[in-house]
Image 1 (cartoon, helix red, strand yellow):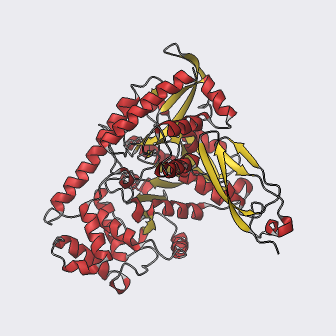
Image 2 (cartoon, helix red, strand yellow):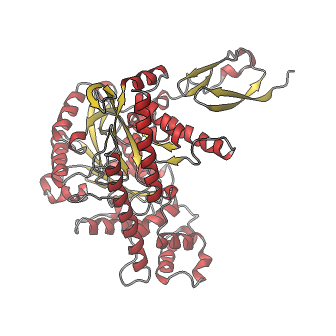
Image 3 (spheres, rainbow, N blue to C red):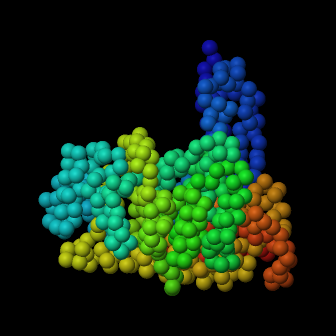
Amino acid sequence: METTRLTQLHLFHSNHYNVSVLVASPLPNISWAISGTECELQKPNMTENGLGNRVLNMDTMNPNVKRVEYAVRGPIVQRALQIEKELKEGVEKPFTEVIKANIGDAHAMGQKPITFLRQVVALCAYPDLLEDDKFPEDAKNRARRILQACGGGSIGAYSASPGIEIIRQDVAKYIEKRDGGIPSNPDSIYLSTGASDAIVTMLKLLTSGEGKNRTGVMISIPQYPLYSAALAELAAVQISYYLDEDKCWSLDVNELRRAVKAAREHCNPRALCIINPGNPTGQVQSRQCIEDVIRFAAEEHLFLMADEVYQDNVYAEGCQFHSFKKVLFEMGPEYSSVVELVSFHSTSKCFMGECGFRGGYMEVVNMDPEVKLQLTKLVSVRLCPPIPGQALLDLVVNPPQPDEPSYATFIKERTANLDILAEKAKMTEQVLNTVPGIHCNPVQGAMYTFPRLSLPEKAINAAKEKGQAPDMFYCMKLLEETGICLVPGSGFGQRDGTYHFRKHHFLNLYHTLFLSLCRMTILPATEKLKVVLEKIREFHKRFTEEFS
């Protein structure tokens, strides 16, 4: 019997990087195909040795999974990870590090944790520290309270599926205080594994029907790819409505009406998703806009989903965060008694940036009681959200009070984090707008900028030759030459016609332009962000000269 062994094959790609794979050897009829930035091993005929008869293969797997795309961790990011390995191995590059400006991971970008949050979580994880005098008493008291609510006094135990009861009570009190006293019921609070888990859970509840009766969900374009990915996995219908870039990515209710009218021809629109403050566009919705959206949802009988994970991240003068729930109830019973709403929040953003703890919650309003029982059943399937994440969430919604020893430090750190983000938002907008061929709207909130790039026709042709979208081509070239990792705007969706040629004059270098977008986080430390912006400025100049 022939022995099968593993052989490592190396392929040198024309874009100056290596791809290595392990294959079972010997394998008959293997050939390589190079396309764009990816190298693919063409499928050999393996029927003879039995490998072609797997139960799970590309033909038998769930077809919806193949439709899922998630640009935030897509090909650009995979290449960035590979470059990091190459740098560690001593491969020479025109840069010394990869700067991942593609994702809103605050701590990975150097933001320091809030002392009080980490102290209490440490005490919960290792209760022996409760005897240590280095920890303030208010931190110890919070840890004791959380531990007493855990099974066996340990955060290693499961909790109730909707979350630890006292933490849900604290979330309800936080919402009431935020919304000026509007009541919140702990029984309508579901803790979650970050906001993403709760969003997908709600989309599962909403999705039903076949053909023209299939659930349609309205999402903004540009959008956070979680939504399109989840809808693809659930085989729901994505209904795109477009934000107005020329008006600082504002939302126009007339655009919502256009989208829902067109959608009713082929699906059953049942939900409307709003991200406020916006991701990836950074806009903050006005109160008037929120009222208009609520009226629209009532008129069209739509379930409202309000993604509010950036609610503390508001920077622009004159902008203010208004929760959908608060506005809904202030509009009176005509709306507050009938509009169905779910709102989401997370420990991953705002001043905390604690992405890795995966803490979050959702609050449901006006949900059918029988459906609510089904929701509770659905979350029970996953047993419970991570207990350390629940503990951290409790500290976010129930922070140190003015008469407690940790208050001064907490407020100082919280304010510093938000002030630095506001400073970087302004700096990013100002610097990018000094670069010929780049236009950046004000970053009103959240953690990102979504600038528009003007690209020459030769660049578009070069991208086509590689089988890439022009913004992917631009971002990949930026990564290879500078080590800066951004996300192409096409990964977030763009209005039909955004990819177009347009007559324009730019320094007499070229006349035909392609308009593209990309997302960049403002999270790198201030000095590093300055370096990033300067590198982008220099790269864009080189790029336009090269392809002019």
